[in-house]
Length: 510
Ligand code: GLU
Image (cartoon, rainbow, N blue to C red; front, top):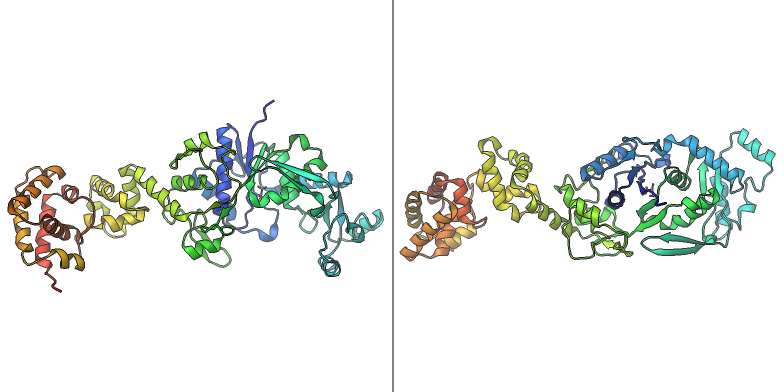
């Protein structure tokens, strides 16, 4: 029988979700949707020391912003809940007991000080088959002693009894078979009486089993834990339903040397978090893709291609295309360089592809910071934005490119005056005003023809006349096609600006 695809994204709420974690969530989502499967969001909050208030909300908000939908989770509910590990204590207690009863685990009382002393005494000390019989645990103490210590409230942990010299193979859908010897695994702590909570390993395995997870898709940093997880599945007798493992390639620093970190973002000036994060303790603010002006579709597309490719040279892919074409075969084993400039390029492409009226809507708040958008029709704003959008990577940059559509130039670029505004320019501009006045159809192509014909008939230098014209209207010699600008501004405004230019601009001689 074909197993139903059920995947989970299982973040720990220990701070803002890193962009690498977002990619993990995305790949889980793409695979689930492709298979018509289920996407679970499980909150792994068993490490009470590292719990950070606000982190869970942040995760939900980030996934929602990116359009990564969740089918089962804390908010969504589902038949395998609760989906927050701190609410599953009874379940874990039951399974810890099962391991103890089956002699797969044991209780250990060693205090941090005792462990410290042992480490000082034994070189490369590891709590495992070679040392466990020299420690204070239920294998070396009598039943009575153990009961007494527990009765007296002594803190203890439950450790997994890892048998040495077993070759353990993890079948990974990206990496193939990865085999290690159990000798290198220590007797991992599975449960701590101090907070009555399991550790990551126990909770993760129990939940994956109970939630009927079919594929564990997670970052490469969890690959070293996988052999232990295989042993745990065995210890519980769940080998037959063990999920498929998929360990995704690391996200590397832009230069490819080492793992991408928060510090790289600070150093090179790009966000490593999806949303801005306000640290509740330090008050420190970390920048986010959303606040930096990225479109969620662009972030999704960018992340999807960090570690996966469609097998051809396509780069711009919608969520639907990603869902249909995603595959583990085309995931790379080696790390993916975090090419931040490429992220900007994606944003540019998505801005270009966005309908102008939608872009105008997004631009309105930016415009409002400078002038009242209500002074302009929607159509005017939409067309202005449409004329300059190919020059920007972010919506907020539209202002720099389109400001002259909304406010008359306050200054005129000196270097352009020096080059283009000569003694005879004002006279030419006055003539130009007359020519423009005479044009009935002020649309771009018609106006252009009339003006160029006039320039030719007078034997003027086209570059000088057109740039002087542009200088009066835009304030500098840049911007979209001149007659597209004048068509949108209209005849009166165009002429008013030329008149203003004639009055304000004075030739600058070297
Ligand atoms: N809670 C782990 C994390 O924060 C989950 C690892 C896994 O997916 O197994 O990434």
